[in-house]
Structures are given as structure tokens and as C-alpha cells.
Length: 384
Image 1 (cartoon, rainbow, N blue to C red):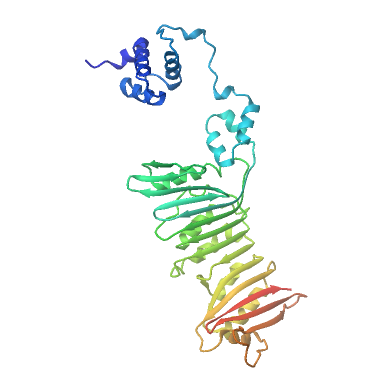
Image 2 (cartoon, rainbow, N blue to C red):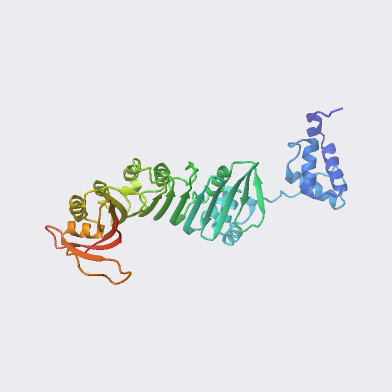
């Protein structure tokens, strides 16, 4: 006959007899508790009470009627002196401290009193894994048939979960940047082809001075930028692998993160036209690629646009197009620079320097041209 749950929960002698049976079987306490819950129900007795009776019986005290009301109140983590909590916390690194602070409010307050300083957070996401590294602490989550495999910092053990690898990765990644006093200098995010940016991958807003983003399309880049605090982000490096996604890249210009940055480096796979340069007027330095079909018209326009950039210190541009001849000579000729004649030494690239006096100013721009090949030239501009 199956026993009712009311009889089990109200009959303490029965429950204690079940615990005594587990002790007599000489099972480890955790295995014994699992078997106990499986037999009488998950809510029949909490683990601290089970532990008390298990060890009492284990040490030979078999009195089922023992009255615990005379015992001192058991100590908990909340009763731990603050000095001791601080001592424990200071021996842990910030990653380990995130797990400790989740135990109770008292320990959380102690953990949050420590500074959380990191140099770089590096996150790489593919269609089968997520890997993040925080200075020398590394975490990885790999997709498998039943869910995912998890590799945690300072642990050689591999754990498994039925959750999606992205869900599990975000679950472990998100708590640390949300800690008070969290400070970070650099963020590096790589999103490979076949992956999507997920909300929560970077807690919003995440403050860092420098960000490097490697993404397949512009939407990934924009979503990653929006997760950053524009008041802190100073330097941005962007690489988009899909060179066909040229119609959407202007979405980047519309973000506050780009508008408030001081330095931006666009990987050369993104080709801008000359009119796009107007979006760079607030920057101290930038790096980009420009394409043109008419250097005679576009080169003077580039010079005139850049000469009005009040914050500019320097920039680097790769200028290319389709022209039957040397692009460096074409660019220099349009700039009004003197073009050297005569043969170059073997392996020596052609280089040309030209200074331009900014109208109504005592400052000038120095253009340094170097030939890359017959279809492009590298242009370095410094404000003197």
C-alpha cells in the first residue's frame, strides 16, 4: 500500500528511521540524501536537518526521540563575522567572488566592497561555441548533441548541461560586469559567420575605453556598439567580413558610441566614398579606406574636408580605384605635389610628401603618400 504524503511528512519517527537505514547502508551523505528524497519525497526534509540526524546516527546516537529544541541555534553564513567574510573574499579573484556574492546579502555587500579591475575582456562566438577571457581567466562553452560542455576558470573538470551553449555562456558571463566597482579597459568581441548577436551577451551599459569588434555584418557591429557606454568609449576598431554589406554601414555613424568616440579604425574591407568623410569630423584620429573613380575631383575634396576637422591630429587612408597607371602618382598629381622622376632602388616603394597650408590658419596638413600597388596608395595625414 502506498503511503500518503501527509503520513510521511507528519511522522518524524518514520523519516528518522529512513535516515538511520541510509546510515546503516554506509552510503556517503550526499548519495544518502538523494536516495532519501527519491524514497519519501523532495520536500520531506531539508538538507541541514537531514545532515544533523545523519551524523548523529553515524556517531552511534540512535535516539529517535531526541529533542533538538535545547540545542544552540545553528550558525549560518549570515552569522559569520564581517572581518572573516573580508578575509575569505580577499583571497578570491573577482571571477570567484561573483559566485560567493550570490550566497546572501551580507556576503554580497562584502564582496562588492572590493575593486574589480580588468585590462581586457575577450569574447569569441561561433555557431558551435562561446569563449570568453577576462585577463588570465578563461571560460568556454561548446555545443554538443544533448546541450553543451562547460569549461570553467581554474578547473580541469568538464561539466555538461542540457541548456543551449549560448544561454549557458551568457549565464556565466553576465554577472561579473554587473558587479559594482567593475572597471574594464578593453573589450574585444568576435562574431563569426553564422552567429547572431544576442541580448545579454554584453550587459548594458558596459563601460570600457577601447572596443574591437569583428563581425560578419553591420547589424552585428551596431548591436555590439549599442551595448557600450558612449560616455566612456574612446577608441573603436571595426572589421566587417561581408564586404557586400555596403549599404548598411552608415548605420554605424548614427550611433552615439561612434559620435562620441575620439579614435576609430575601420578595417580596410569597408570602402567609404569621399562624402562619408564628413562623419569623421569629431575624431582625433581615424583609419579607413576610400574609393574613387575620379581622383582629379576627389583628392582636392578630401584635402578640403579634412582641413576643416578641428579635432584632427592624424589619419590614415587607403585610396584606391580603377585607373590605368600608378595611383600614388595620380593622387599626388591631383594634390599638386611634386612627383619625383627617375628609377627607384630595387624593392623601394615610391613615397611622396606634400604640405598644405590650411586657409586662415597657422596650421598645415602634411600628406605622406606611399604606393601600395598600381591600384591603391596609402595616405597618412598629420596636422602640424
